[in-house]
Image (cartoon, rainbow, N blue to C red; front, side, top):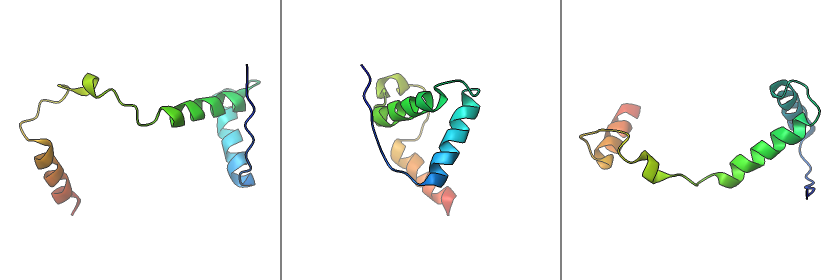
Length: 76
């Protein structure tokens, strides 16, 4: 069962969103709906990171604190 969500957004933003959604979905029927569903799924799932899957991916001698200090030194 589908649910309807209504929101008012700026017309310029709506035009840009529709244009991009149509281009990405090859101007098919339901392109805007599909793009909006994908966007909401991404927004809802934000923050859920599988940290266990990332463990061991990088082989570094420095600790996370040392890497952070290097990053801050590099940004100056």
